[in-house]
Length: 86
Image (cartoon, rainbow, N blue to C red; front, side, top):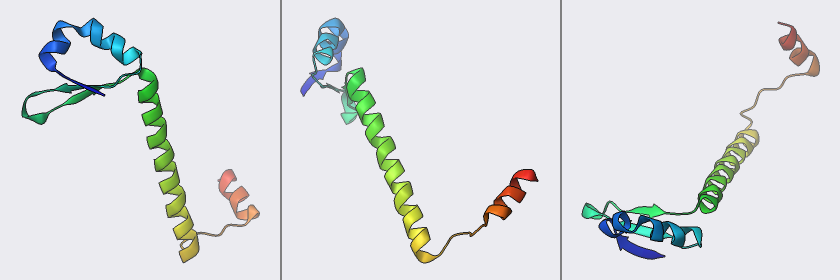
C-alpha cells in the first residue's frame, strides 16, 4: 500500500493508475484526513462480493434465530396453493 498526496495523483494520474492495475493499493492523502483509496476493479469486485456474502450470512443467522425461537408461520401445501389462486 502506497500513500501519496492528492496533488501528486493529479499531476501523475497515469503513473498511479498503472500501479493500481499492477496490484498496488494507493491511499490518496487529503486535507482533514479525508483520505480515499484507489483500488483495481477486481479488488473492488472482491470487496463487494465479500460484503454480499456477509449480509447473506447475517440473514441466515437471523432466520435461524427466528426458527429456534418459534417465530415462524406454518402453512400446509393446500394453504399455499390457495394463496396462489387468490
